[in-house]
Image (cartoon, rainbow, N blue to C red):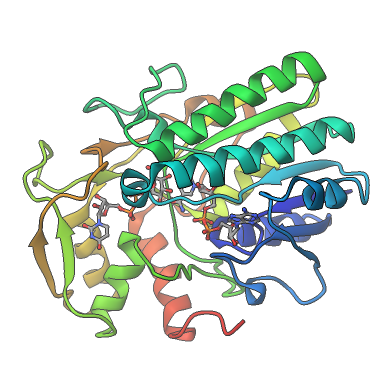
Length: 328
Ligand SMILES: NC(=O)c1ccc[n+]([C@@H]2O[C@H](COP(=O)([O-])OP(=O)(O)OC[C@H]3O[C@@H](n4cnc5c(N)ncnc54)[C@H](O)[C@@H]3O)[C@@H](O)[C@H]2O)c1
Ligand SMILES: O=c1ccn([C@@H]2O[C@H](COP(=O)(O)OP(=O)(O)O[C@H]3O[C@H](CO)[C@H](O)[C@H](O)[C@H]3O)[C@@H](O)[C@H]2O)c(=O)[nH]1
């Protein structure tokens, strides 16, 4: 069975490619390498250097083979950046997805797994784990762009039989435990890799965005999910969408504050993390923790790396082995 993976050269996509290959599937990647790396993929993976904004080029790739399914990771994904350049986010996320969905419908693709986000729930302050039934109230153009795609997929399923799984990841983190892939965003904006680099002395002090949130220690709380557990959820979700569409929230169900993440990095690395308080980052909700009961019950998903120290350990190991990240 061959799967098409858009954004497969990125952080989450490259780990999903490994999971598909490990499960014995064939994989084709479509990526414009705007934030991803060819070096994140095994050399022999079929690769199209294609931009999803180009509808004709996208259609050409989608029509080139028949697919057991499409996994759509490609997107811009920075909450803060979407607050200062919202139209870029609608164009790069919504229009690209529309081009892909159009090509899938035209070529009779029947299954699509979509990288959605906890940022769907970023509006009001929330204090309890968030189930799929919670009101969607995106707190940023990034979250809104993802919700618009979820709605298109809803109708594409109803009208054309393109069934989908909208996977609302909470915070993806960690690295392949065999060291085959890791996190290399440029510039890096995510808390765990930045905290690790600060501990390793590769960056100046970490700026802690906001110390006056209504949380247990004043810093934001997030639910970190290991990227390999996320990849596993994609394979399980594919089995669910033969006849129907689904949406799952994906996290461990346990929130860690930004200060607790710093403490985890200190424990795992054995080094002090230099940090300093900084103003809040626009668009950041105080707390986002997943209720993933539906995913667990319907697919049997259980995270293998549920503890924050396990997640940090794999990320640290990859960073130490690849201090400059990927070299292609
Ligand atoms: N990292 C997280 O914590 C997180 C959380 C929730 C949701 N998500 C979603 O998961 C997906 C993957 O996130 P990531 O952290 O791996 O991001 P990433 O930036 O590492 O990967 C995105 C990939 O998509 C490619 N891409 C972007 N625009 C493209 C286009 N127009 N055409 C073709 N390829 C394009 C990039 O080159 C890159 O390889 C995104 O959709 C993101 O919104 C991520
Ligand atoms: O230098 C930094 C970087 C981050 N943070 C804080 O660390 C927390 C986590 O921030 P990340 O940037 O690591 O992750 P986000 O929660 O902003 O975003 C991630 O999860 C979201 C869903 O919740 C989106 O989907 C998004 O794509 C994905 O990157 C936030 O409170 C942020 O303000 C800092 O204090 N200092």
